[in-house]
Image 1 (cartoon, one colour):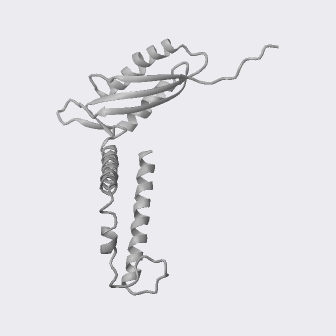
Image 2 (cartoon, rainbow, N blue to C red):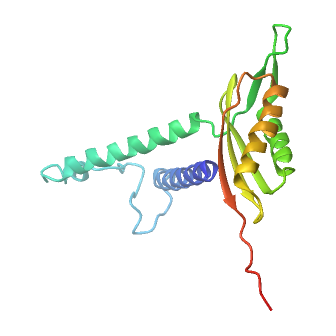
Length: 192
């Protein structure tokens, strides 16, 4: 979703800047502009003195300006923090025993863990995302269980088999995981 918001905001900002720049350029070069055009010629200013002073005496003007700017600052900070926060762990640092270490792609470990989890009895689909820090990753696991699956048995096998295999293969001291279970929908059985 963040990628969609980024593209939308970038496209909107680009369109506003191109249209505004084109309007100013057209007026500054002396091109014939329509009567509704906000600028008329090279000597015209973007914001006149009368426009700048029009709202100063109104009691609602400055609080509105400050509130609008505060909202823009909060949105900009939110977007910046969302950029800095990674939803996925890009790589995991693995102790290779030689002191140098190795880097394992986070997505590779996620895929292997998903395949092993989906091979467990009763699991219809698994989605796994690694978050946290490169030396201390954490797993976010979403499982869709088949109608006949036992949640307790599936969770036990997940934590004792798939998560342990992933932890041991990556050489991690621990791999905590948050597991969310959901039952797959199925049609009602008909009795004849």
